[in-house]
Length: 347
Image (tube, rainbow, N blue to C red; front, top):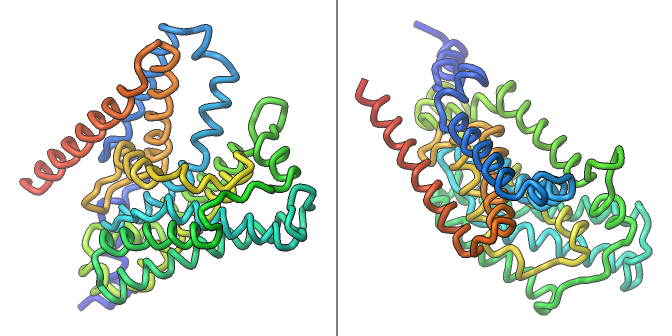
């Protein structure tokens, strides 16, 4: 009879995601989504080469997508476990608010001239604020066994309401100018926005965590079959709490990045971020049923709406077509995922 350790190793290795990055790309919609993104870039580049194929447009697309990418990376982990997190947009707002208010408080009411010490404390507060909401979500989902949809829908309203209570609904506008000129609008090597470099580093770390570590293998195993993972010795409850906490931390980082870029908390400006993050992850090939997905796919998925939005504006197409196009591609991605699942189950 095999030992518990041998059973655990077998279960994790046999999970559909234990095959390596190449197999995961092949078994998801990531490859096709990447081809769609390339086709869109070629199309809009041909229609408006003078506007779309410019360094300014590329920088603008990358900077605007950076905070959303942080949300999508965290959402990738959650959806792979067969969960969902509708609260990330509100957690972003809450984290930005508590960070900005902390920096103001440490600066005597006006953080415009605050130094790096205050900024560092503001970053820590944003990350901790996001983590606390993540822990709460994880406890309610994994321990209390409340459906993730209900838990995070409640957190969505609670986090946003808490941010509005703290500020009386008025945005905090005194953000350190040093933060704005370095992280928000600053560049490295003359062309690469610092905000994009930070997002890229975090994304690479997430790719390493999901695709090369035991944490990632357990994430895939739980999404494939949570009960089998539990019986094989994986601490499913603890792992789910860690996954939701990670998502909250990344939402907190996204709030800090948004604060640096806009120079204000933008309380009312992130109402659709949760849905945009979910759409990006699903477009990137992550299955809503769990057990399938890649961080690289989510990166690609983030840029499809951004490219459509910019391309439609430059091509003179009414911007109202953008959500329709994204919705059509999203439905197609889910339909393909369902077909793939049915084909696999019928074998």
